[in-house]
Length: 131
Image (cartoon, rainbow, N blue to C red):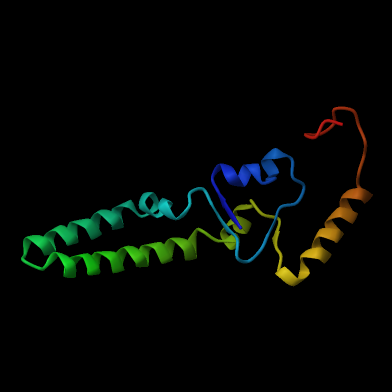
C-alpha cells in the first residue's frame, strides 16, 4: 500500500527487474512519505511559520495562532497527498505499469503471467534473475 523512497525499489520495481508494476488506487507512492511535504512546499511552510510568528508578535493568543497555523499545514498535507502521493502520479512518471481496480487484480495478474510465459526465452545469465 505504501512505497516511499527505497521501499518502492525493494517492492519489485522496474529497477530491480520487474516486468510489470501494478498499483491499487489506494496506493501511496512517492520519493518521500507525508513528511516530504516540508521539502516540496518549503517556501509555503516558511510563510506559514512567519505568519504564525507575526501573529504572536501582534498580540494574538498562541492558541488561536496555532489553530490557524495547523489548518494551513493541514491544507499543504492534503495538497501533497492529492498531487504527489498517489498512483496516478507514479503512472505518469512511468514507475507503474497500470493501476488495477481491486476486483480486477486476479485477471490482470493472470494476463501478465500468460504474457510473460509466452515470451519467455531461457538464456544463461540473460537477465536480472540470472538463471
